[in-house]
Image (tube, rainbow, N blue to C red; front, side):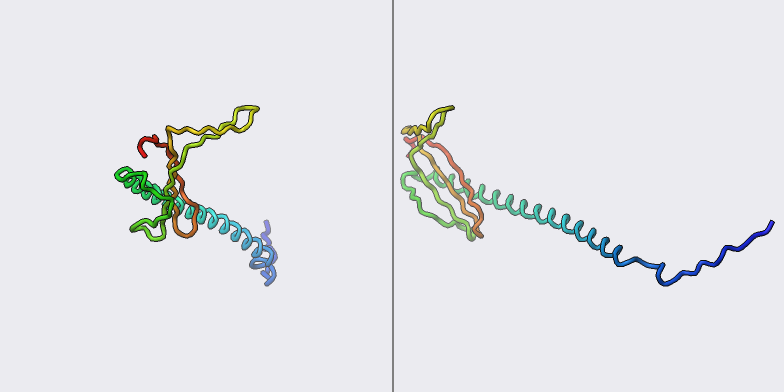
Length: 144
């Protein structure tokens, strides 16, 4: 039995490493993956910031409503007031007559005023021109 040696395979400079196309494809895949990952992270950050603002607005609304419960409601004005200890936050309280707009099926819009109830609208405006938080409540007219 005779053993023969396979011919020597010489490595040429063209057969080693990656081609330019392979490097570009890998870079594009990495870029797309990184873009998707970072956009998800940014969206989560925005949602957390919005949640923090909603929590702060709820705290301010609770404080304002507690202050309204201890004071007379008739002395309220519709002017905008700044919130103490919360830089950039403001609120506005409005009390108006309650008017319900009712539309029955296949009928026109009908407005119904209810004199026994008033509508209290509390608008809390966060800083940075963000969307305001609005709380609407109905209160008996005899409390005003």
